[in-house]
Length: 549
Ligand code: GLC
Ligand code: CA
Image (cartoon, rainbow, N blue to C red; front, side, top):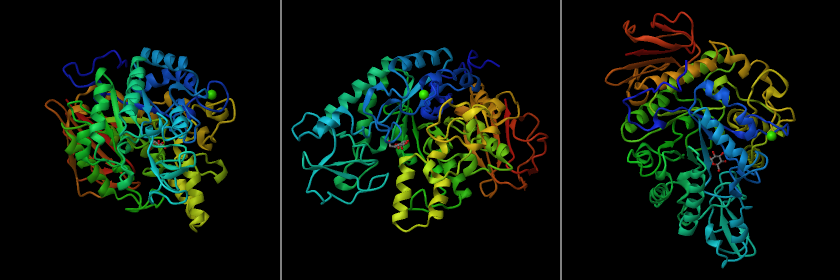
């Protein structure tokens, strides 16, 4: 089936990205072309056929710009060059061009809240208060040892770092090698717009904006996200850059509510295309504590959160649909079952998500049902995980408590190399991978799944194709069914000519379903069991998607 050439909704004048499915690549873990153990741009180019077969429309590429890699590229030292570890600018141009031949657009990850401390701007900024770049960053006077205030950095420690040369502290919301950029400075903003326009001219399809809700920080008032000037900055940014082309822009916003999301993603295009918010994915932690403080998933709350976002954004904003990214554990291990029901539960989670309104994101390996890992501490690489381990040891947590949190939530769960086949290093690299391969690659890998109609991969492929061929996925109005049911997640999406019905058993036991058997005009289009007939009972993790019209 060639979905690329069929125009899917000929009457639909909506933006392309409302019908799109976006695939996220974490470049260092995707495919290594030269055997140095690190994935690279040529590696991605070599896998474009695979991505076209899956049916995705765009790749969100985690950062590949020049970087000392303190936070795996989220610490950029040159926004207009590629880190040699990933290739060259010519490789990037080639990727944009080759991906285009597969009808795939490239979305760059823009890290605009902070740069690397090795960026030329910061190197200059810290020389003197009079340096023209000084005001590109956020400085406060003080005395060594007397912090401006008690704010903490996301990766541990104080958010303030002393620089003797200028006798000032600089502010960093993440690691000390990620100084915050000062958006109050119009010169800095202008410099950023020029850089973005340069990338637009190179033909990128859009941008993912890293922690964009933190750019308008006001540390004197201890404000980090949603600062008062945030939407003013976003509107200026959009006007000066994005609005000049037909791009997709997605803002990472941990602190977004539905009301804020309507500002970010107002259909008038004044800010961004869509928001990438985390309310549903933060539910399995103790309220008010950190992600490491584990709590069981409150399923009823999950339903309420999804239903609220679906209902409140309809017609007034646009949301991202995701279970995974490079910062989150693998969903099949997290909320599915990565043992006896791995295949069923991975498909259930896909079916549940892909019927919703919004733009679905598939994170590399999710389409194979890749799982979390449990490594010895010396095998972890992520700065957040390493810092957490030290910090909690010092606070007196037991090692086994800390490891339990790391197994459940470490970002390295998502970052183990992509599992291409059952050969050496899962086909990811001929060299020693920068992060160990998940030992289950002999069983879980792309080669085993692409040709198998019943695989998780094939389920994703089907869901992606259905979205392109049926407008109801884009514009259907959401209604939650069985709101009180403690096992089932069920909903409909309805437009003038079509209706979608999705029914999912979220748990590993057979449960009764109170819905009527769907009428004959409702065709079963995706399911995760053979002999899916009566709806009266749903087997462990059973999921069905029906479509009428
Ligand atoms: C975002 C990124 C994360 C990074 C952080 C700082 O949350 O997704 O990987 O560490 O921003 O840039
Ligand atoms: Ca490489």
